[in-house]
Image (tube, rainbow, N blue to C red; front, side, top):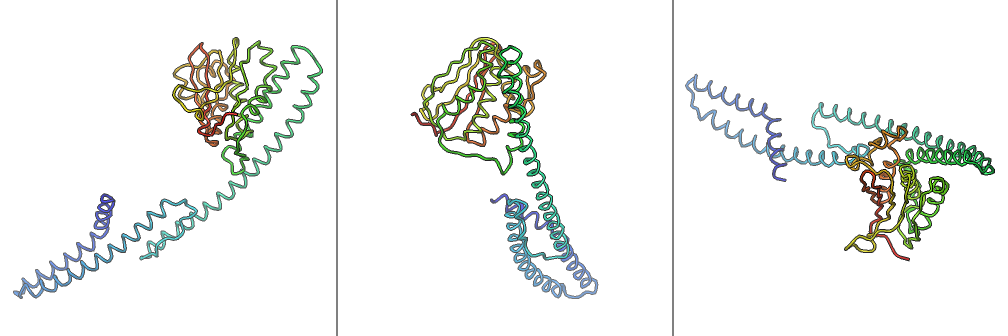
Length: 340
């Protein structure tokens, strides 16, 4: 507080230094003129003293008013630009011009934001319709392939499911920062969310001959069913993608010394793992790491979306892994877990 006040005082005197210098210069000119004409110095010193006292009083009043204006501008600077309207009354033509420029820029910014929001809304509507339209032929192809019991048909079904997952990822990415994100936050049974996500990948578990180690969790959490299921599908999809043999385990983890309501949902696999240098960055947007560079088809978006969604839901998602030893993804729900 003191430092801020001192900075204001220094800035104020720097701004007024020309006027103070001119006042002192005029006093000096009068004093020199009086001395040259051999007039009493007191005749100029006394008026100079009176003017100095009056000037100091005016300076204190002006400083107080400037301080109030400075505080008001500081308060406005902490507000969003759309609320920065109630400026102090201008004390000069220059300030009035600056305020008019600022108001015009704010108006243009509001108009631009309105146009961008309308375009964004139109884009969301278009992709929403597109997602529903593209799912129709996908569903039709799935029905046709389900009547064919062959290895080729099963592989095509997996590819169709992957396409549908990518379509959902596009829509989730677009809606992530939207005002229209349809979160429904309430208490859900985690088993009702985990089971559909696991069932969706049943064909891949069978084809790759991977063991699923999942027992009912008997746990409730405050979350959003649809968005959490999206996160789980991304995590399980990655586990299947990078696991060629072994098992995938889904369980609740109770760490030593932790309370029951701070437990975490764990998805473990016995896959190829993640390089140590990639662990801190796997949730970054577009980062694919060593595995992604080897795969060539990784986008680096899935885990980024998982982290953003978990953050929006009040959860945290972390990863632990090492090469050739599998990966563990942990989703912590905070203090909203209850045992059934």
